[in-house]
Image 1: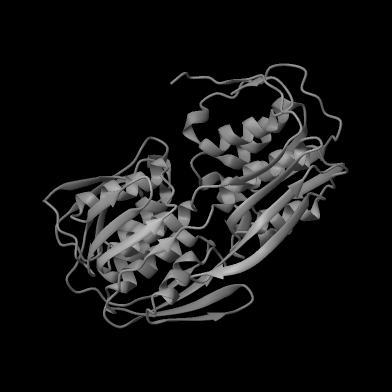
Image 2: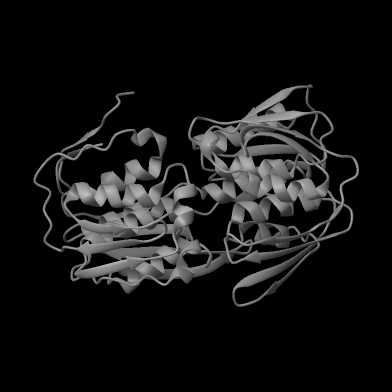
Length: 414
């Protein structure tokens, strides 16, 4: 692969209908939960990205039989704690924070040591946020100062825990939930609001879960050791992937786009709410529910007279993966936009809050960056007069894709 990509062909007005591949969060969660079911589960529209393929490869190393075709993925689960593997097995999570953290929850009962590794980017990320609560179940860990590589040794005598998740991290919450599946007794979780895909899957499978929703957090109670039945699942389209096309359409001239069957789970639609506040023309159509997940068609039109925003931080968690795109819209809005309490953005594949500011500066947009906030001085008439060079984009695909959208009407190099 070339180490640079030149974007030079300007986008012409368009009117299109498209389908987006399956939701990554749901694809990974389906595979992990299916591995704990007894029998064959089948999914359709599974996202075949590297993160999901890495998930399937890790499960194969743990003795799970998997059949992957162009049309479906079939996983034959061996039941709770049914992993069968050789000693000193090494699981490579690649670049996936979701896989590397969530799979640890399924390994708290594996007696033989298992080593988890990842690429250079993933190996810089914090794992204490999941190893700390998993130790309470009885698992032990050898870590690289809280980072990968990590060696986990499970226990035969896990015990339920009480856990308070304060970061608004669905990965941390879900890791504990998966550990609770195979733990005798009731595990209690007090979790700051975040994505609830794992809770919805548990409910769909009629697992013993009780959720009490409060204003700022959820109380989750899980009773373990319930046998999981195999289940088929057509993965809805990914809202995060859709967001690139939504913003591309909004910033294009005389264009219109319709995206079908998108997962609009309320914990994931912060990007739609924020963009609407900024004047982006978005219409949600044909809303319905599928296995507990809310899905719909999304219609977008070119949007002029974009407005600046003081973004409500309560929406941060539900838009955490889309802020680079939101920043691009703010750059072309009239006025000054403020985004606060976004330190979690710097805990992703790369320090995205810093990158968001850098990209806008290269475009000629003034910003003020602090540890957890970004102020953007929008300019609706901004024109990029020179090539823009963004180095090392392969470390974070969202950086590259945001640059691609940002350069849609100008010549740039990523």
